[in-house]
Image (cartoon, rainbow, N blue to C red; front, side, top):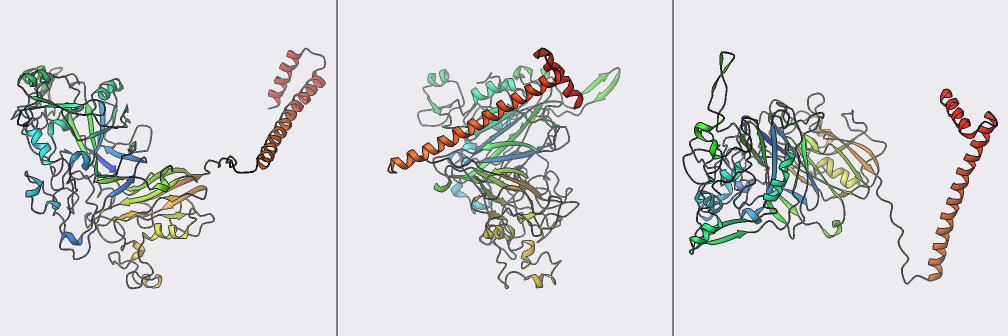
Length: 630
């Protein structure tokens, strides 16, 4: 282990990465400014502080305790597809080697107590502290602290000897356990994440994270990733007779010390794949080459035995240059390092200084989602195709949401059939900065779903052919289930004329102010076919902000003719079958007759025009004549 060569997650400086669907936190909670407060609340992101989406919670007026505030989780059905969307600040593959590593974990692997962190009042900045380094049951008000990995997981990291075979350049690591790495030489704590496990993939120790995919510009490494993923390869540790963990040593040394070599089995089921990374252009925030689309990976959710609760999606972004190849190991440390801190180079007699921090030249960036659940399907939907229709983005103009994005449907182009169902579901936050531009109550995200006549329209009106076949669904998606008929809670149409510009009034239900930040509708079956244009009436602000999508519904598979029941009278079955066969033969005879007739007519025309000229020459002349006419 100490001399193990590993393919590390080695990234170049200033290459932030941000999850947009599902929404990434970038270590935020309820701070109501564009910049987060705490970069080590849950994990080590090393991203710019401006990124990330606020806690998926409401913010009632006058809320002065956590009991007054409701927080929400997205709920996805098993065996459906989530479009994972992200932006990365720098290129992938254009001027570097690049990897994206996608993983997830739930409370069944992370341990009970996985949570986002709960706001304590309406003012914000109340759940932004790092969880104290102590047992869970000794915490006072643990809900105010977010937690992914457990306290005991970090203890194991803290007692594990770091891999001494790794490349550390000229960095002076201050300790010998696994919390000290080239990127974290001082051994700082970031939630309960293990720094060595964060910085290197595949990790040789036990990990609670289940691999989804590795997207790489070096496809030839896929065999290595696959063979060493915990999806296919178990992990081991050594324990003494008192069940105390010994430092990570190999099997022979463990047995010689009369230790117990414990195996952590490979995951029961993984839908892991390794494929080419989507390429992107440097300084273009993750827009792929030759396209206008975000970098996206379509993740098909697992089919668990029971619901998976409090799950987290994890994305690590990985780029390196030729100065720090993947094969570097400890023999290149110290004075032998190919890179030095802020070096001077002599180019044609001209001294030039480079900006290189060897702790960051080759560097990992990370983002994680807010918690979500993966649910078993209801019995009536077990064999149905369910499409997830979600929303990404947050409140504000393009400058105010920097490193995040403005509102958009995910996907904003969808094709389904009349056999399929759509699961309309999205979540926002009431803890956005108060001064961010937008409609409705300050600091809040809301989205509805209304049909347009044409995609270039901005104003909904009566359409000639409706997407909706159920008025209740149409009303639900437009109002988000607000009590619009209750005059004490929502203004009437006439009253709204006097409150047109009162965006912060809760009774202004036309701006969705009575709706919660989380919306979830039971999957809706598609019925009408056609191309339908959709808009969010709250966020579509003409020239500077738009939120629209196109929904294409095609006919489903024709229903199969059912075989007659064995109790049906034989004479009826025979008659039906004879009739079907007779019709089939009739169509075949007619079709053959038409083809033969065309051939005879063509031959007659050729003969009449060219006389007794040999057949091949006749055909050649006819073809030339036809081409000239055309």
